[in-house]
Image 1 (cartoon, one colour):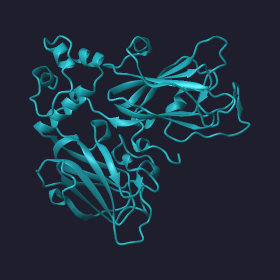
Image 2 (cartoon, one colour):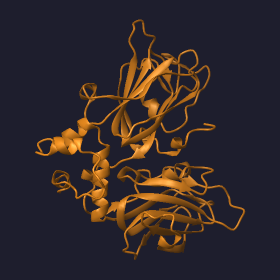
Image 3 (cartoon, one colour):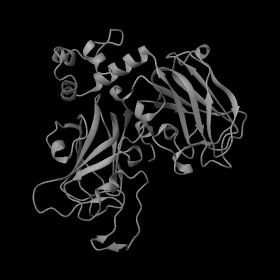
Image 4 (tube, helix red, strand yellow):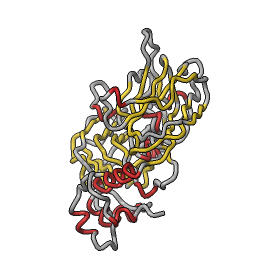
Length: 377
């Protein structure tokens, strides 16, 4: 999208590639609901007809003859704070919905469609006009962590893709005190910036699973100077990294020749605060490289340097959260929960109502006992 907002560079939390799922739709007579969250761009082949008419790479409902609306509920592959939504009506021209709205909810566990229908839903994109055959972009002003979104189209029609861009927020109850991937997207790691993303975005580096093809990694243009390319990451929280995995799988004639890792605390603008985690090291094409790191100094940010350019499939940074990092992760998560979910999380605790109403918890205060107990394994 030309001139797209900055938030479109954030991960699509609903994507099937991240584990998203369309758990329910009111109707899918002409085209399946699952198409909404396919990671690939929508395609169209004219005069391709099936038993239900022209085949569309999207979700399309029947023509309504009542005043209702159609809906689809999507479980986010990675829960988080949503900053923007794209409702893409690509190739839907005479059959796109004239209006749409989006809601979010946050629930515990793995509810089915009937349970989700009774959840508390919050509007994140008000009912708005859509254009046909167009990527309709909507900013989202929300500071809560959502697990599901509900797309409503008024009254019916077709949508090719729904993109839900935002910042992942991990549930610390599923991060035991053992070794975890501190950079992983689903643990709360984020890409803050990079030198170049000509062929593919750096957020792919920290996506779940292995890259199936070269296009699912990060790849830069060919450099014609004496510099090098880089990616800046913020870890899930402060921790010590013991093992790094630099995976160049699928990159054969375009892998970096060398790579290195540097780390620091929160003061990323202080050049003196950065130190080597992995000095410049030779890499091989199409290879999962693993390196044991000797540094035991806690870090919150890591910079991956590749020399001079090229592509990488995945970056994994295995280590342990510090006590301060774990406490900060819990506070961030709890502060971002919608009030109804926060109350469920603390159900049965004597201080539950007071803790929920006292949010946001200050980062310098001691972690309240009811929250600390959530982390007991």
